[in-house]
Image (cartoon, rainbow, N blue to C red; front, side, top):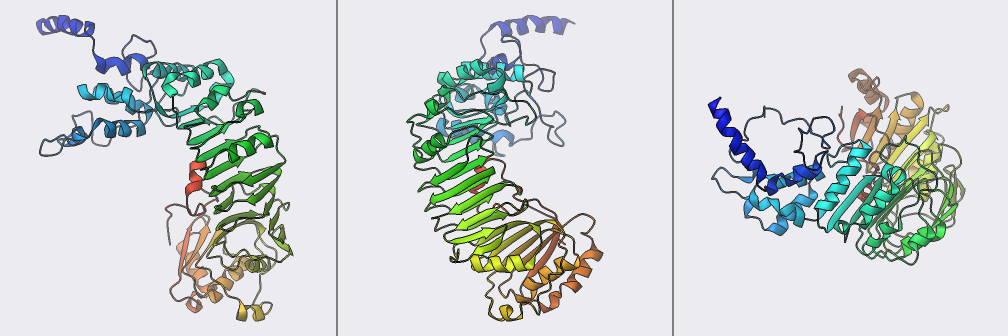
Length: 505
C-alpha cells in the first residue's frame, strides 16, 4: 500500500507535464483529451491485428526495432528524410504511433508526408468515428500529404466535411487521391458530385481513383494534370468531353481504368503515353484512335458488352476478348471479329503476344481462325463458361492446316478444365502440334483435380507424343480471370492474366 501511495503522486505529476509522445493518442482517442484506449476496445478508433506468434506480451528480443546484436541502432543512424519516407509508407495508425518510439521520432511524423488511408490504415470502420479521426489527423499534421484514401460513403453522407478535408492545408501537394468504393452495397445519393476542391491538387496528383459520384464539366474545366500517371474511374458519371479533357491534359498518364462509366456511349482514346487500359462497359463503344505506347487492353469482366475498334496501337501486346454474351464486336484495322468469328480478314495483329479469350463454348475451329489474326501469340489463356456440344475433332478436318501452321505458342492455360472428350481433343491439338510449347496448365475444379484424374488425363492427352519434348503439363486449382485487377495500380502487371501461387500436380 505504501508503494502504491508513493507512486500515485508521481504518476499524477507526470500526467500534468507536457509529453509529446502522448499526442498521437490524444487526437486519435474518441474524446480529444482522453488517453487512447486499448486498440481492441470498442470505439477506440483503431484496430489491432493479431499479435505475432510467440510474443505473449514479452519485451522484444535483443536486436529488434533496428537495434542490432552489437547494440548499435541502425535505423537511428538514418537521416530524418529517409525515416520520413519510411513513415509515409506505413499504415496510418502505425505511422502516427512512431511518435512514441523515442524523443527524436516525436517530430518525424509531422514532418513526413502524410499517408491517410482508411482502407488499410487501421482506422475504425464506423463512419462517424472514422470521420472524426480523419478530421483530427488533418488538424494535427501540418502537411504536405502523400496519400488520401477514404470511402466514398463519406462523400454521400457528409459532403461538407469531405470538402473541409480537401481544403485542409495538411493536404497541400497531395500525390494520391482515392474515394474508395468501400461497402459496395450502400445506396449512393443521386446527384452527388466530386467537390471542386478535389481538383486543387491537379498539379501534383500522380494517382487518382474515384468511385460512385458525378464529375461535372465545370469542375474539370481547363485543368492540367502534369504528373498524373494512374487514373481509375469506377461507376462514375462523366461526360465524354470531360473524360477526353482529363486524358489529353495528362501527358504522362500510363494506366487507365474505366469501370461502368455512366453518361457515355462512345469513349475515344488519344494518348501518346497510355500503356494499359482496363475496361468494363454496358453497351459502349471503345475506340483506340491513336495510342502509340499502348501495350495492354484488358476487359475487367467476362460479361462486358462493348464494341472495340483499334485504329492505331502498334505496340499492343496483351489483349483480352470475350464473347460470353454473344454481343461483342472487335475491329483491328480492317479486320472485323463478331463474337470471335472472323467477319472480314485483312490485317494481322502481329504485335499481340498474350491473348486471353473468354468464350461461351470451347470451339477449336474458332480459336484456330483467331490464330490467323494473331499469328505471333506466345501465351494463350482460354476461359469457357459452357460445355461444347461438339467433339472438336481435328485430325482429318485440319490435316492440311497442321502441315503449314506455324504455332509459336509457348504457354497455354485452360480455365475451368473438366477433362471431357471435347476439351481433351481441343488440348491435344496444341500438345501434338505446338513445337515451341514450354508449359500447358489445366485449371480444374477440386473434384477433378485428383491423382486418378491427372493420370487419366496424361493418357488421353497423349503426352508421350508431344511435339515439344521440353513442355511441362500442370494440373492446378481453377483461377478466374482477370484475377487481380481490382485497382488501377494492378494494370501495371506485365501479364495480368497470370494467377499467383497455385498447387501443382
